[in-house]
Structure formats: structure tokens, C-alpha cells
Length: 498
Image 1 (cartoon, rainbow, N blue to C red):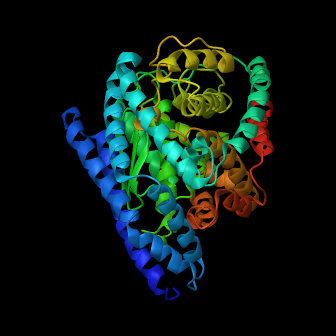
Image 2: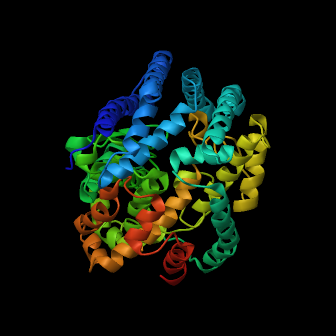
């Protein structure tokens, strides 16, 4: 490695300390969602708020701005240039906010999330509404302050936290195109879709579901000495690259919901584990925004593991795990047919590929309206239900299946949702490029050998970390910018041709 210059060297040391605090926060968040008893909520909220405030104060100290200016005039090489850019980006975001606001919104987010857990189970939006109103008030304040600092709209200032450089004007065009394409395509798919064959019959014991999930994680390349699988109300991936924690949830009537959730989160975990060791602790060594992160989970779940090739490999393992070898409904073609079944439903995380973008477009439009002041918290259920019926043709029966289903807003993550569909489009484009670049890739997947795919991803995605922007990374890996035509072609090939 090239010897760095004085100011930059001091910045690297400082950002390494910041990374340690961030990783500690990640583990505490994971524990709060997966292990912590409810009685620990108050103490945990205080711990999180303290660490976030310390992180903010360290990042925004008077020394950092001066060092960034000095380092800008120093001779840097390779990834150091991108690292300094990411350092400055972090500093601009953080220095815009006073520490008191960082602490206040951390407390509000923790209180709202813990209340949401009970409210969701009881389908009781009214009980969490005051907490969400406080989160929204503070988030609007953050958005306004960062908007002024970044020179973008308030919503784009929030979006930039999850999708660096992402802008709603570009997303509006992409989503309008999808919203125009999907209804007609959905109608065509449903008109041609044959009745679903009878698949495996439950109940499916949780312990066997877990055993199946662990086995498939191993097939995909998950390293169990660097991670674990647990249960949470909302599946997620947390921790850090050396200690990746993923969660799922189980339904004894449908083992595929859990399994696909495990595969999805394993895709996230593989990305984290594949980040360059030599860049650890530095901003350039982090994942490149949430659309790329989501592309890695959706590439595994939707592109690779819902393919005929993979399910031909996995079907005998599924039957063996549940003691159903030779029983009707466990053959690969039946399992495949049920896995590519298009059927509009209420829950985003269980949605098929065709209807999933509509779930995201709904949330994106509503959260934009919330930040703009065009929608208030008490209006959310009615606005949600109206939009859902318009986009998916279903009447939402209760808030548990509607506006209470996702944790994101209740944990303060406003500006995150559009990255899911951007990620799905990116996943299709990356997988298409991988199939072209790696001979026999689908044949390898059909044998349960994910090493060729993982090797390609390590080189073109994981190993790039944040050295490139999302658009640069995608163009480098696939030879073109994000192209909705690739995603549409994938949908047509799977649902109209196959």
C-alpha cells in the first residue's frame, strides 16, 4: 500500500474508531430485534442514543473539517481517493445536525419501534401513531437541515443516506414507467397462468425449517464461523463483515416463506463478507448503498434460487428434510410452479416478482408525501388502503396487513423503500451479465455449486465496496447503466415464455 500523507493518515485512524462504534451499534440493534427481552427497551434506547451521540461528536469535531481540507491537497492513490470522498460525504451529513437532535431522534426511533411491535401484532395503528408522529416531526427537521447542507430536496437528503447520489426525480421516471408497465403485464400473466399444482402439505415443524435454512445457507456459501441465523419479527441482516447476523421468521403452514427469507438475507450476508479486508474500518470499505445491497439479496432469492435449475437441486433436499421423500407435490416442477406463482397479496416481503414493485412504489409515494407535509400520520391508513387498492386491486382488511407490516418508518428509516425495486432491477442486470460472462453458470447452480457465481460477484460487486458509485459499479460490471428493459425481459422470460 502507498504510504499515506499526514492529514489523511490521521483521518484513517479516526474513521477506524468510528467504524468500531458503528459495528457495536449494529450488534446492539440486532440484539434488540432478535434476543432482547421487552423489559430491556428503555436501557437499550439510552445505550443506542449515547453511542450515536458519541459517534456524531467524534465525526463532527473541529479537527475533522480541517483534516479533510488538508488531505484534499495531499497526494493520494487508488482507493484512498474514493475513501477521502466518502469521508467528506459522511462529515457533511453529520456536521449538518446538532448532537442534541441526533440523540433526540435516536430515542424517538427506539420508542416507536418497540411500540410498533405490539401495535402490529394487535393491528392497532392508533397506539403507535403518536410515537410515529414524533419520529416524523424529527425526521422532517433532519431532512430540512440536510437539504440546506446538500443543496437537494428534503426527501432527497434522506434518500442520500441510503442511496448516495440517488435523486427522486430519476426514481420518479423509473417508477412511473414500471407503474405503467406492470398492470397490463400482470393481467397477461394471470390470464395465461395455469392453476397451481398441489404443493407440499404442512404443517412444517420450525426445527426442520431451520435445519433446511441452515443447509441452504451453506450451499450458497455462508460461513458459520462468521455469522448466525436467528428469529425476528421482521427478517433482516445485521452485525458486521466479521460477524454477520441474519434473521428469518417461521410459518408452520408454509416453509417456503422462511426459506426464501433466509436466502434473501444470506445474499446480504455474502455481500458483507465479501467486502475487502484491506479496506475494513474505512468508508470506502463499506457496501455501496442500499440498491446494490438489495441487488445482492434479490439476485440470490429471485434470480438464482427461484430458477428451475436451483429448485431441481433443492427439491430432494426439501423432501428429505421434512421426511416427505416420494410424496406427491415434492417434485421439482411442482415446487418451481408454486414459486413463480403470481398472486397479488398484502405482504411486501412475501410478494412475487411481478407485484413486488407495486408494494415499493406505494411506500415511496407515501413517504415522499409525508416528508413534503402533504400527508400526516393519522392519514396513513386511509391513504395506504386507497393506494393499495389502486395499484394491486385488493381491499386491505386491517392495518396489520397494511401500514403496520414494515418496520422501516417506525424505526425512522424514511427514504429507504425505493432501493428495494432499484435493487431488483440491478439484480436482474447483474445476473444477466454473470450468465453471459460465466459459461455454464445455471448448470453449476443446478448442481448446488454457487462458487462460480460468488466468484464473479466477489470480483465485480463485493470487492468494489464503495470505491465506485452505484451507477459506475453497475456500468463496470454489466457494460451499461441501469436499464429497465433487462428487468422487463427477465419477467417476460420467466412468466410468459417459460
